[in-house]
Length: 388
Image (tube, rainbow, N blue to C red; front, side):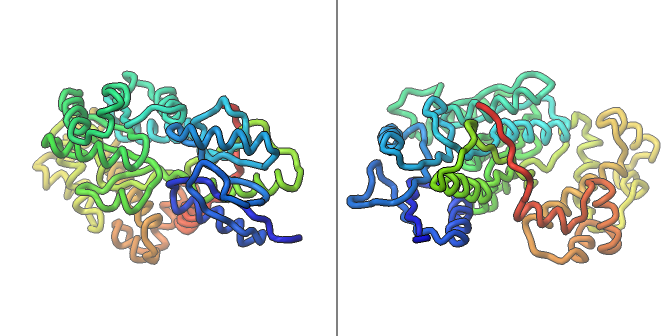
């Protein structure tokens, strides 16, 4: 079979999505052309198109409609235009929102909010998943597009001032779920510009885990791992099936998130007791040490019984359980963001050796550290189907 010629009409897109497409292209001898335009390159006579139909690109939507009418196989990586019925492979935005709600709930937050610059169908799905899985006071929705006229939408100073005012006025401690990492960075900037402590007063969670954004902030950002590499691969595989004349799903293929990379911006437990806040910080400062409840109580000038009582009243847990939670959280972060050997990670997290970490990790999380690391790098779960 001759090489197929595939047009990638994606505009700005994640490098990981492109890597997924490229991997499939290598496996199937595709020739790919990458363009950012609203028409076919002159003289192009290829076999299929992978596109990303954003809400702010109406010309591209018109162009995609013309391709479909002409019988050119096309797969969309976005859900900004659900009225345009084409095959799609997209992130499971509702599941992403649900994961954010669980993350904040595990940290005992009572006050949560959402922030996004815009509000397309994609944002509504993500916010819906967040709201539907939050059991407390409904999340406040902070949407810049709804607050400003179109001419001032790109006014950075106005946006930061508005968002800073909202954060100052909100009840504390507050946890905010941002639509993506770029919005999370804007949110962080607004909080710090008003002197708010992150994460103690305002915790921030983004989506996509784009390292160039999340790791290069005054406070490194926690982020949900949107599986863009698999999304690209599965989109390419769907296009291949279409070009082969096979039947394709009538509903979009949804790619679930693979977890959360936890960094400083959500590394906090939302508590009102100053003693418990001090205890949690002391535990974090001694994760690599042989540090137990007796030493913690002594450092806080409390009896062990008083410390246990405070933990039960505030968090419904024990100091030793919080120590284990923090040690495992740090282990998960090091497993997914570094290539350090297990013995080094074990030492950094207060486990006496690698086997000890492996045993505790599997008992608490149901899988070995190596399996957890591999799943974060290249998840191989089944793809779910769902109607929007």
